[in-house]
Image 1: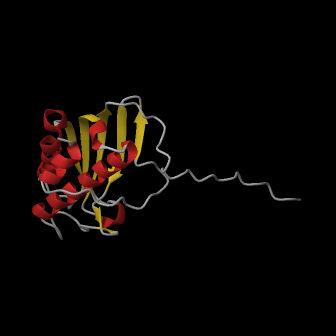
Image 2 (image 1 turned 60 degrees about the horizontal axis):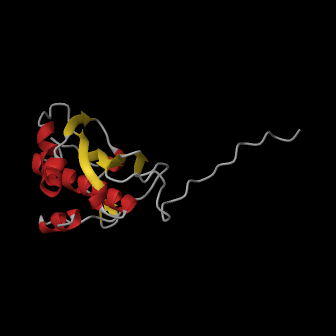
Image 3 (image 1 turned 180 degrees about the vertical axis):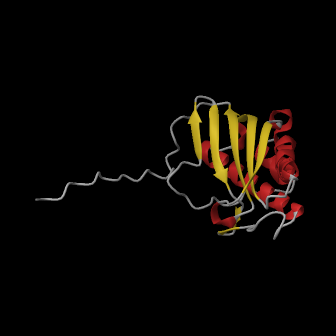
Length: 175
């Protein structure tokens, strides 16, 4: 069964891609794919805004982690045209926008880790770091990034990837 089918069978759908900024969603070197940090994004806006341990509880933060992870998987799918290119999930880094006395950080990222193990099997088991931070982009509760081993080397972006903007160097003022 294809990875995307297993994901859907588990009750999850890939969200639409978030807005882009001056970085690539997935950078590839050899058989390693470095997935940029993804915040929970769905239906045209960032979701789950606020500090965990204050405005948001653990359960809500876990939902944010799931959605952020699905965004990472969406970017992998878009980059390679399939999630079946993923050979192994190596590392998950999670950043939690939380109050200083919130100490349940590993519990926030547990559901994201569980999704990876469920859809990739043994190859979804990974190393992980979860840290609390004082702020995240758009005020979201969680941001997730991945390091993934892929089974194919596609160092060149797909044709529909966003082109880099070209900035001209500043010209000296005429005298």
